[in-house]
Length: 208
Image (cartoon, rainbow, N blue to C red; front, top):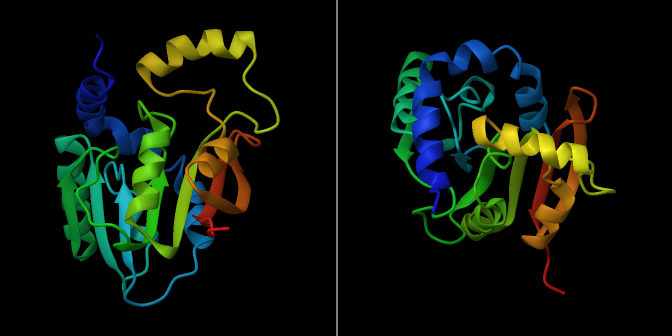
């Protein structure tokens, strides 16, 4: 049986040396837009899930407590080096986004940028984000999504067989994923390539 998690760990370790060249400038504005939708307060606990090389760090407040995780050890090393260069105190660790080693309700903000489209099981990853968020916490997402009003067509699903193997799933829908994981979507802003890439802000849904 194909191990998607192991493949992701391997390929992102291989991508790490070139990742900034591809992703830093292209996603600078989308990252800033997504993080700008968060309501920030001093002392917040913030978790970057799938932090990559730490490209979100320059756009975060300096008066919050930052933790960063990534499946790839190489990415974690890059994040630590970036934090050091920026003079930021960041706790970075290798960790599977679908099995976070943090207690329930521990964070005020969870950031998931460019990870939901590559996770083997995004529903499980969002369930973990929901678990570690406080009851009034904020989930900040930026990623590529299929439109919410209809599922992917035959041609898109066929193309996805290729893109998901080498880079990313292009058929996932944001609103169903978030709502099924127990979130309420508050902000939904197109940020790149029309509405393909979207910046989302969600909160845990209130119990009825």
